[in-house]
Image 1 (tube, rainbow, N blue to C red):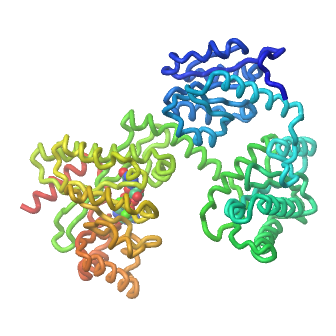
Image 2 (cartoon, protein in one colour):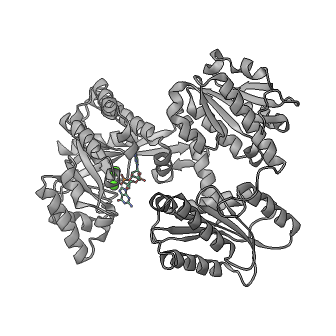
Image 3 (tube, rainbow, N blue to C red):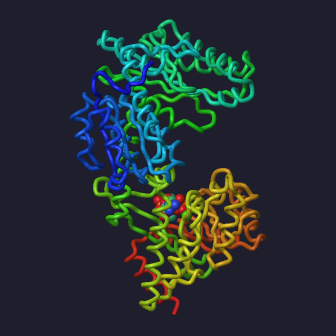
Length: 566
Ligand code: C2E
Ligand code: CA
Ligand code: CA
């Protein structure tokens, strides 16, 4: 395959730059061999790309030192089916070298940096264009060499044709994912790994007589297309998966393999198969990591949730800039005296389209994409400002706890940031608590203990959140530097029955024996309060006293509660 260094037909590159890229002029380099359409990142750049789409052989993104702007752009264009075949090459500032993997994971074809030799960039560019053109003319094989199944694009093409040719028939897509192949490869070598993939491939192809096309996506994902008929209903597919599963465990003697499957029934004609597969993969994601769940049926809600998630991600940065987040405060009271002893900061989002949103809707998204650390930082700063304001007004303030997430602790400047914020606002550390959850402490335990100890030594109290929910490990209580344990709402709700009450009581006593105070969460009734008092709890938080309150309402609450005490 020759290098298109002096192509007989001049190809066109779409070159997109950020403001900071201009000093490195790659346009000169490319303009010797290609026609260029140049633009900078803006609202109109995708429009421009769409307009010239048919002329473009390759997209060059000169991202300078800003990875996010390029990744957003890539996601935007990748969302459009027709752009997926166009290769993308990234040229980045050397400081982004570590981001290569992230870019490749987004589907870019090649990643280079400013220090890459220019002729290497040109060779890569030419190779990518060649590869694409050859693939389009069918020179590149349609067949996955390892399994003999179609590769991704061939599967799409074949399946789309089948659907187009049979507009009145109903079809089913079946996507499966096999966990553990990597481990198997490492243990048994690549050849054995390939043989295993072939066996799985066979299995996928022979699931029913009606398999019309079967393919392997990259790595461990398999896809098959069936005609939907009596013989091959989804129940049968389920049986097959279970059978395959037992086969791997039993006959093949491989017990570390796990299979997950998504079934997309009644696939819609007119929607490209690639899109249908994307949707099935979304459904598959929902059972990833869920033990014992092997089969999921695609439902429209998966897509609407995914779209909502995308909209949340699209609007989150703006939300912070435009002050759409609100910090609410939920009071904590002494269970014996009723005195106001503290509050927990809880975030809300007043979204321009979705309205008032609870954290349950967006926090998981932020935890996944890392934005949570900016939000937590905002909550911390805002709370320091509020405390400063209330102290200046002469109010009798109480300690406020702020929720911290796993990602917060991965930032090397976590402590410095929060300590700076409270110092600048003259808020004594005693007025700030940090709530952490057990799920934080899966790995990197030592580092976390170190950071929390530093916080504690500087006067910030540490609360262990959600104790007793999920898989509590008693170990956490002794390993972590803690001051307070928050009994999870589920424990409190359960104390109506005697046995559960004993469990609750044991938890309180355990905390006490370690010298820790307790806060019981989600207390809604007087009965719960009396029981907690009886069992020796310290503080309670819940609707019995108050829901989380806006800043203004909490200020009033502070004034009223503390004036009661005088
Ligand atoms: P959490 O930290 O366990 O917060 C307690 C949740 O229980 C709050 O829900 C609160 O409104 C609710 N709650 C309080 N009392 C009662 C009650 O008596 N009955 C019932 N049914 N519920 C009660 P919210 O505000 O929706 O927050 C949900 C979760 O979102 C929080 O659980 C926390 O994990 C997370 N979250 C909230 N704000 C932040 C934040 O600023 N940063 C981080 N990282 N996470 C946050
Ligand atoms: Ca909390
Ligand atoms: Ca909690």
